[in-house]
Image 1: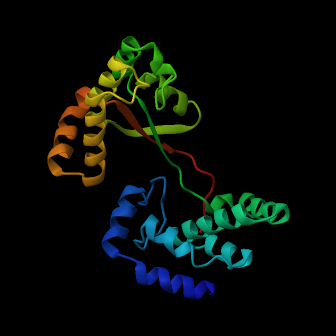
Image 2: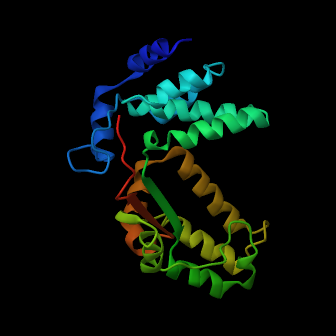
Image 3: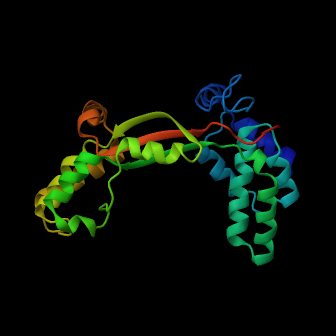
Length: 236
């Protein structure tokens, strides 16, 4: 399939409303970090699915997509490069690696999302059980908000948003630590785990609303959003 056919397929999948939302979210206005980037409103899952059908595309064609002014065309080319790299021999991997390095100015996603355990809920877990350090999904280090922000901003990123999350998970981990984090025979813990699994899969509005209300107080995770404020000279 030619590049023009791929572009035609992407245009058919495009959604104007989604494109508007993406352009606002990725700050594409004058003076913003993504100034000039163009979206057509194709989602990431759609791009990943589309990429599975273009495994024979040439590196020359991938380079053409990578140089596109349209965000989704560049992202699709990266998904295809990842697939080609994972399946290639050492010679092909070297060519893909060199192509990537020579075209980094067209790879302009400067967003970074960091999620780590919140300080005070973790300290309670630690105080309830010494085994928590070694438990599956347990944590061995606690970051304070200001220290984490300082760590990333000292390396050229800038925090632009943040919030707390997963408040419904906090009591689960306290309960798990109380009975022993490596136990799998605790009825209360297993029942709570079933509830969380159901909540994640079904996403009922009532638990989403409760989680939203409790996150500022009980949220187990800190979620921070960063942007690279001075990207390399990106031109279309």
